[in-house]
Image 1: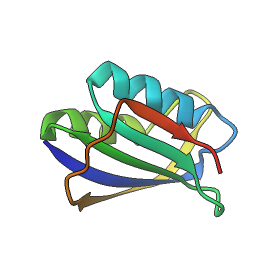
Image 2 (image 1 turned 90 degrees about the vertical axis):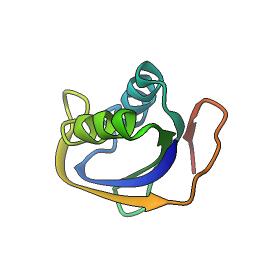
Image 3 (image 1 turned 135 degrees about the horizontal axis):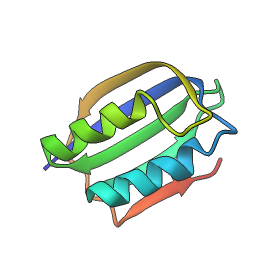
Length: 90
């Protein structure tokens, strides 16, 4: 198991990106969290197997139907344990 941080930029707020990310993560068996950032980006922190996380990253490059993703930045983080997958609201 490993943990990654994903920053998604583009038109990713107001298009159900967080809810869709939660649904995809749960479908893949990934735990973590997703939140909107003040700069208009979305931040995801996810824990799972390398294969699960790769599938999530690939999904993030497209996102839900109305999203227009410009860039997806992925960084490895120290392993973190989450209970389920949460949408954090500022």
